[in-house]
Length: 555
Image (cartoon, rainbow, N blue to C red; front, side):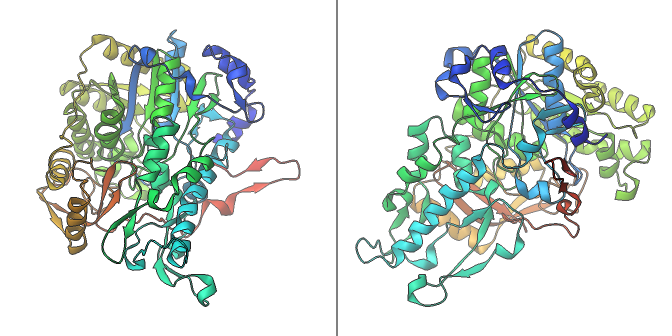
């Protein structure tokens, strides 16, 4: 059966029953039908948070199809509940770009999924739409101010850095000209779109602690300069209050359930290659307020989502993970060992051995943060026992336990061993989280630390636009902000053709975007785009819905 077949056959419990398992009164829920609900922010309990155990799930450098972090996260949560732990999984919301593109949704897979799968992968509770509208309200206010006769700020159109967003892969919108057709249609200028997951409003929602903090962060969005070179922020346009109105519901985390009727929270959805790649601080704290164990994931490989989760989110929110699970697949090890795509599913121990260097680098990196590490081998039916045994023994030889995870095939029953291993690491008390760079060091030093320590680069080169960005950052007094790299997810380097564990390379910072509202800087490496394009054969072409509303082809 497909993921969708499995999800459609499960008998879901009413969301009131799911809330009861967390000790949440149904009167506190804001229900979106029978199987989805919003949780109020007053349920966050800082005293409970310090007693909860936060588990981060990350991965080795993935193949284009992904290696199943979400599936393992959900499966691990099922396994923890199976062995008697009160656990909840906290995930990101899917973007329609990947859903209709090549990667698919983000509701897990097989027998480790969150449901209702169709709703979660489509419009869900409207959070993405609210983020999109708030982002584009600011765009409209900027362009309106350019021709305002009553309160014109004198913004120089050439300096405007704020872009519109849409939750779709649409390469034709990357660079556009707006305001054509005469004076009644605005001031002509060059503009463009990012995908909603890359919006700074998305990043702000994920970093905000409450409504007041959200409003302040939205007001801090950097827009551009006036004609006399004075910086302009969203607050100068009085935009933050109205933007916050549009996000009044989106700021509340979403409660759903797993296939085994365990609670799950899904909230926020930034990509990890072009944004911070983790769910909201509010959602994570909500989970930790309501449960003893919280399983959460960070997008793509550990060089992207995990590094940002640890150096940005954890430092900002004062969170201390108790362990990190690194998802590996035999398929990805073959890929990093030289297997062409058509041979990913062909057993080849030599290529697995060669590809291990990639996984080993991620294991080393997570150790630099002072965290206890486990490897979860996300099991595929094409894995040979010889390859699995070798990987388990190899990990053991470097002091890391590797556990076979069969959550896709068997749900919680397939992850009991992984759950027990995670509890063992947590109860050992050996994790002592530390960030790898001090926010107060220079921007170049922070970038260099990530490049050398996490990527293994020899050094960093800066294009002219990046050097200009560094000067702007200094003028705005923002050199203390952390770094959120925008980099290909396919390699430790900024060249997606360099698989495995490349050496002897340098990275190039093309430009640096300023996310003053979210509270970080975004160096853009190489050819990274913040608006993806669709593949030659989009997944949307295989989707359908019948007269009874039954969906097919969604993954």
